[in-house]
Length: 158
Picture 1 (cartoon, one colour):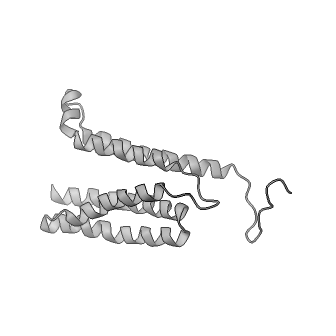
Picture 2 (cartoon, helix red, strand yellow):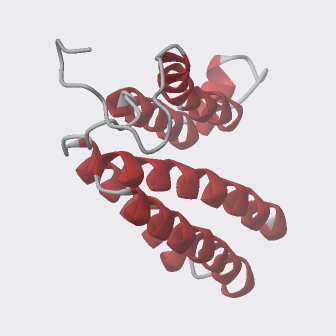
Picture 3 (cartoon, rainbow, N blue to C red):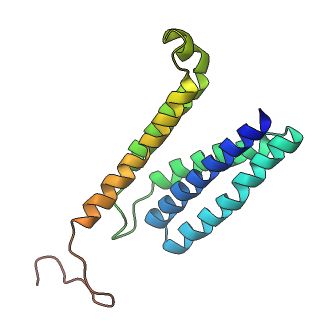
């Protein structure tokens, strides 16, 4: 149903906002990350509502495919010094697998003897995109931190 699809897309919009905001923060600046996350938090529900109320999926397609294009461009940039060391290629690979499951929904459904469809596996694959981010956060947790306002000593000096 259209309302359920709109709600599904709004949830995806929150995930897109987090992903693109984090990517921009790591690759460009914290300010760019916050601005992009806010823009996606506004654009995604707007696109989902337009699709639901008017049947026009173009705004949602702009959010989804424009967002993935932006993610690819950001992934190609060198990270900022001290940025969270996320393996963006793995995040994007999980998204690509999720998209393939979504597009092959009926094929997966038939191949599994009607046990589950590609849509269900799409959500599992999309959730796997969080693993590289969680691993990066875990690696950060194991690093010593300096008190605010102090500068790190140059490499090789204490």
